[in-house]
Amino acid sequence: MSVKVTLSPSGNQFQCDSEDTILEGAQKEGFILPFGCRSGACGSCKGKVLDGSVDRGDYQSSALTDDEVAQGYALLCCAKPTSDVTVEIRQVNGLKDIQVKKLPCRVESIEKPNHDVAILKLKLPAQEKFEFLAGQYIDFLLKDGKKRSFSMANAPHEAGMIELHIRNYPGGSFSQYVFNELKEKTILRFEGPLGTFFLREESDKPIIFMAGATGFAPIKGIIESARHKGIDRPMVLYWGVRTKADLYYYDLAQSWVNDRFKFIPVLSEPLPEDQWQGRTGLVHEAILADYPDLSGYQVYACGAPIMVESGYKAFTQTRALPEDEFYSDPFTPSVDNKATS
Image (cartoon, rainbow, N blue to C red; front, side):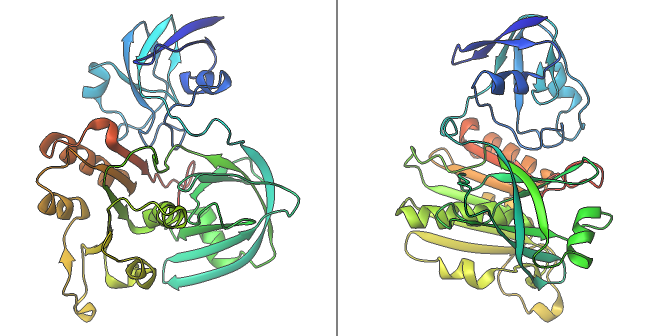
């Protein structure tokens, strides 16, 4: 059985099989909705049910609170329609011609710039054309049927390769494999590109990037792509980490600085030996301190869900940031499901 799904405010409609989630149904019909983890953990696909009913499925309460459920919200990667339904959610433009593929890749190099980050560079098949937008991610397809997702840290103009920044999460089976067993020339399989975290180039608004730890990875790709294309909108990067050693690409970020680009690292737990003279505390609070009014900005945030959610609430509720100008990719590490960067 299929039901009719109407998207608001666009008015677009499609038929959705009752066994499919709304996100799956939309994708089958060529409509691109915001999404990230596809497992009910990140909240990127949150939409408001205006009419009709849905089965919200299984999701993490950190991504969808009881208060939000009471207000009619659902995660469209989990929610299945149980009647004709109208959902309020913004559609995504710019991905129509991007083809999702399953491909092999070869580990070209493994670099460990600090104690808990590995930078992987993967070589793609020469005969395959792999197109993506800076900021998107790939899923590794593991032999046990599980998937592990990692954001691409390079820009699309760097053809034939993919760069990933993988954090060594305690208990993370794939990250442990990367740090302790993975060798150069190993062949891996992946699916991608995926996700809707990319620069909206049609805007001319100044940009604030908020990165937490390896959330720097997709933002690095976006910044390098923008530089390559000659996009000169004012940009500022806030990179929040615990200690100075966690700024594993500090010199690179510093090299981007000019009269149109600012870089502000923020340490939450600086060590005495860091001799840190810069900003301290939580990264979203540093932005709040610097910007009393965000009504004319776009914000791109990537990192831990608590950082992303705290930033979203504070920026939209106290700094007048328009809700539809906050773009995010919350990392949702899990030993059983998704482990992103």
